[in-house]
Length: 283
Image (cartoon, rainbow, N blue to C red; front, side, top):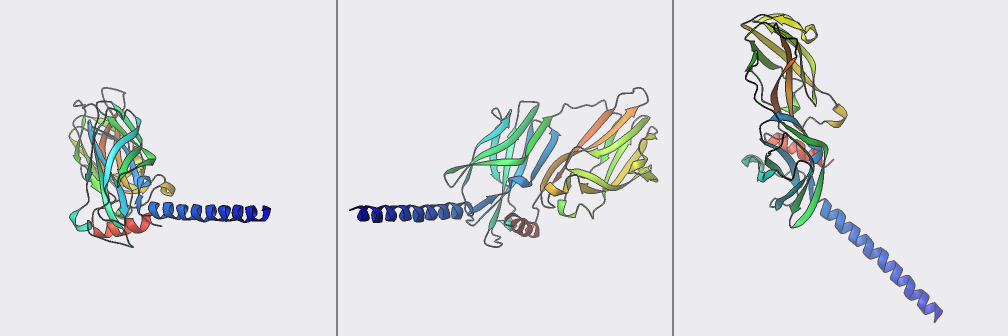
């Protein structure tokens, strides 16, 4: 009798282990059906009450159903949010290493001065999933300052992250009064690898020559190559949303004025980008 109980007990234990292993495998298989690149979103931007950003999703099923449920973070309860498929037509049927790619576009509108999004709840094929952003999305609503003494003349609003080190970008400003240009930088994610400053087309030195006095009715051009501030946590195919910052003072005031302009680098803009991003996400 005892021997029979022992055999029965052993069968139950072994069966439990086997079924447990099967369940774990099913979970692993389910999790590998799609991957969300939340760690590839780098957003720290000033702007208006309407804003948006993209998140890469790759899946083995091209027709994966994704619904927005809610954001997690600060001042997210009052957000108006729409989820759209921002994928370009040329990549909607692209398959790379068994995966399709979808660009999840979040269109938001806020009534607050600041929003921080730490994560998002999505419903994927009817099952709710919580996704955390490795770098929180931070959006600041700025007021329009029309009293600036420096106006933007030329500014690259969209760049390609995977060519940032080999492309020279030109930021051009016009001084409506005598000013002192103190510095030029980025609020987050990007740094300047090398740069030159010109006034009215004449080279006056590298970026380290700032501060510089600029006379009224002069054009200031800053041409530079970019670098990542934190290369260990930033990939060349990240979606980066940040601000370029020109700091200056007028001759009438000792107060530093900062002129901020949006700079956006989309992760995927063509078929080659899509293939590389898929490869990067499944590593």
